Image (tube, rainbow, N blue to C red; front, side):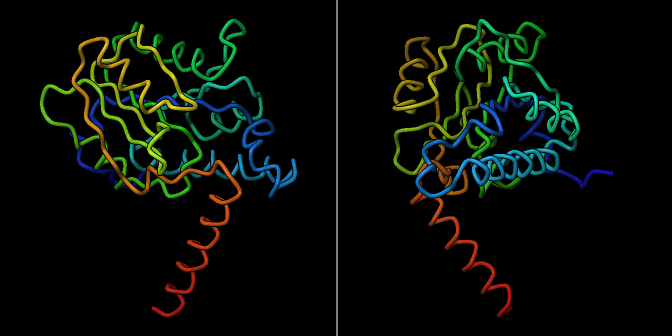
Length: 222
């Protein structure tokens, strides 16, 4: 039995698209701190943690689509109960894969779509609820930037379009806002520490380790 999730309005009819490059392929920028085997273990840990949080938040993973070219990733997703979608060969790259998955949802009549990276180690159900509940009336897109204010760490389309130009990667925060403006969409920026923190560089990894050690110390004291 799944735990009772957050209030229905925050997650009502939301479909989640989780794009994953692969267990053995992602996080190459951490090569200075982790070898290939360690990066694979980290990628697996991050994917499973994200799926656990989404499972609690959604009350099950039937509304979560994991899209990836990696068979190991798809097996893990399927085992957890998510919809595992193999990345079509013509959709080379992260953004075409996201567009393909979102387009399939739109064609199936699903209009509320959350695109979420799986490298957010501080992700929580509370953060997702706040993010998806934060937009004023009339908003078509909610976006959460990374700590640098240049990347996109969560993107909620409230009336999704199969033709939206996804631009995850460098400068995606500005590019996604520009794409919304080009379509005449009102958007809302939600700055949330739990969504802003991602693992891209050795410095991020060190900060995450320090945070985990601090939390462990506090727990022992309490």
